[in-house]
Length: 279
Image (cartoon, rainbow, N blue to C red; front, top):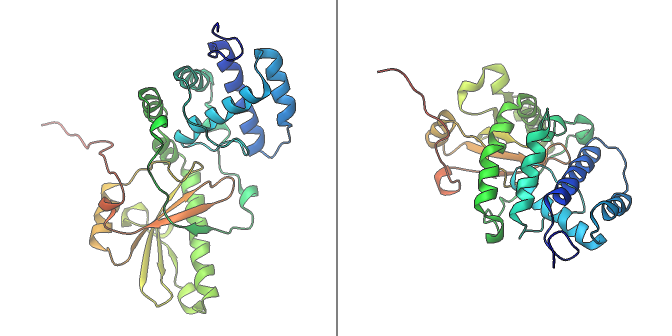
């Protein structure tokens, strides 16, 4: 079949249309504005000549790409791997062409979506991605739009995540009948600054210290994050108390999981930058 015809490869123009439509829907969904997927699908059918099912599958392919970029995805479009390299290029074009990239403009902290201030903590995820998702083009795109660097720049997001954990620790201890310990929980990074090696000083129900470093993202549970040399060193110094609490899906429904030292056994650590001085 000819390229761009039903059943054939998607053209760059068709990919650009559906990628733009996906990010527009994502922005609407995150801001709580209504839209009808069926209507937008029908419009894309007219523009691209593709079937309803083909468009749905391509939306799911885009979900797989944005998930790997550490971005939220549209509800109902579960990630579907095995996407074409041309789709990765279309996502890159869309992000580059935005005067303010979509992930910076639309994916900010939305306090209205987390009004109940609850936090679900579960087990760490299986970090092994599908082999179909690991391509050189996707890896290059991830490096270009580094989700770890994006989250690190978003200081409001980091502060909001810490505040949620601070409140959650007080609530957890109070519900466990340890109001005495709840009164002693400290938001260390706010009280003393970022140099302590952890953000929240709390306690286990038994009274044992619980020193929590919080890492927050609007992305999925597999989104990478930065860990400073000071934080890693402190984890090694206090393996009995240190907890790394990864908060994800923050702007929609905050969830998290905990990691305990030795962090080298559960994280793939690579140097992100170097301190340099003239010699």
